[in-house]
Image 1 (cartoon, rainbow over the protein chains, first blue to last red):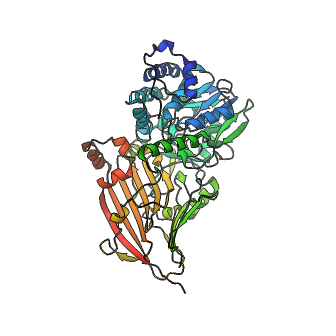
Image 2: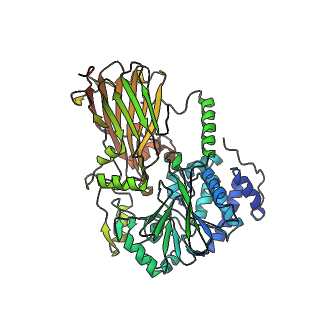
Image 3: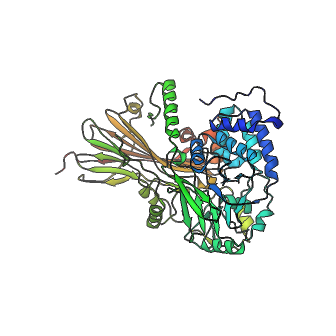
Length: 329
Length: 269
């Protein structure tokens, strides 16, 4: 079972020891809810000052969806280097689906606070109140802390996450993709982002839309909401903004990444064996000082299996039978 | 026995029936494109295109197989039965003057609802599926409820899609083999938030000593709000229960319930 939070008398926010928090989180320990509250408050202050388009310089390692797969995130640091030796840009979707959303987002937020110029976090479609209620994060918070307070601290903080990043004025980075309402980067800068992700409009498009190699322009999904964007849209966006590449996450790829539209767009996916059963590879993209891009592909961390075995044994002890087999009807 | 090819199989004690499963990673980009071209609709985000579950009648080679390709091929490829997400109306209003959007993706049932009941290979058996009913050809839930040892068990996913955060569509299979009988459940589960809950179950039941395969198809659904109110009245934790098809199933209304049987040949000439 997950250890209960142990800080009985939480220190006032000003004295949160980030290095101690980080070293505990690397060991997958939970922080006390009062510490989470203080950390989220500090993170809001920090993020508030960031533009909707954060400009950063290479070298930087770009990470796609993690979805609470804590062991696999640690694998990324083992492969790509720990903070602050390596600069990181995370493209969102830190929570939901995996078993350790709290541990994952807690560590990322502490790293952001400790190394604000070397760690960048932008918002994914799962950094939202609505989505996290359906896909696991809310339930995990309630279960591990006994009440949903930390879910409120985190989701309130999510409203402050920036929406996009530009590397060396050349690579546009976003969680989902482009929007028919956005031609120029300047149009992103004027979005009022300090809110829950809306159902429609440019802010929704940035975190939700997908590329479609079969089409040139924007298309409306048959669902009645959501866009796909094609080759001509990408080409025009890059020309208008004098850039050469769009880098996004949001879509599962078996190979860990996908390059499309004559190398004008790529998808980075960083959750190997997604949901502990897809069997897919994952990757991070290392952008070098000259803009060169190198995919670093990796497989699921071995700790996942050890953890699963441990869980199964515990369940077996409790239930006295094989938890995998069931008498379904 | 599990092999690197992801194949597991089990033969019943009398040697007549063989259950095989294959579980492999989701498809790579190229096979996804080929599959999409072949069945002419976009592919769900998690596609286990190499996974299969098969029940074989060994003497005749008769096989009932479940695979993602054939299941997806039965998804509506037109506007017929097409659902809209809860916010679609809002979108229509807001975007009616959006000149940039020149194309609309060809309509298809993006909820991936399928009435798939498996793919039959008759082998050396003659005949076809015949209509029956539960009175004549019952799936013996009384016998299946006994705690007989489970000699073989597997659970195999065929596809899953989060419907762009509007819910979940999942087609998955469970199979268990006991000393005297076996049961397979192929379940399509759809939760479209704010709109509908849908469960379509195909159950396959075999008594090892018989030559009859009994297949029951049960389709159930209910409006999302109706289920939500029922859960609230029951004091259930709605977000959690809305992910559990087993708990939702009794709250839905049955829209279709059919049983058919296949008589396999005992001896093949």
